[in-house]
Image (tube, rainbow, N blue to C red):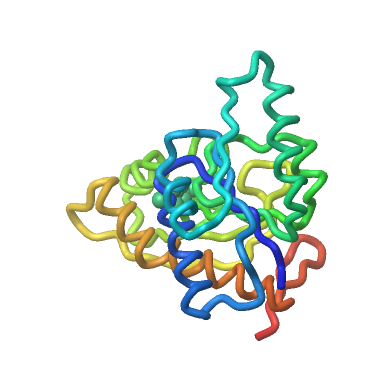
Length: 208
Ligand code: GRF
């Protein structure tokens, strides 16, 4: 059984999808040990607490210095010694110490088909605004390992979602979440928890 730490900043619908998949048994061999947020008002924390999961907020606002925040956050994470760190709508740019400590054991969900609409500045609705501005007919979501770049790590899973005429950034975001994010994030956790994911030279191989 692998131990997961899920890092969140907002609503936590991806966290919810993961908790549901664990409860229904579509994700096996994993359990969520802790949910940590940089935002004490994140609804994701309520979702976690309702499921009896430790829900902790560590906000940069409570520290005079960024380094002290990063230290406190990492110490808290380390206390749970997770096998896998899942970024599920975590809006803090990860810092080197955390990435190095959990190298190869951090995954992120991004709401586009990487390498489109990703990298610095592409988060939340901005991703969908950019997809609509470019006029793409297909977008989607990507689960990838996190390395020291922004959205540059090895790609684990992707799922395409059609753009519809008349879409707003909000309607597209909703479709991408429902049809792609909530499907491939739990799926990626299940594959990793069951030892079906390997990485060679930056490329992921999945054995089903
Ligand atoms: C999702 O669109 C995710 O891809 C992005 O942030 C959003 C988080 O939503 N990184 P939620 O908090 O899981 O509802």
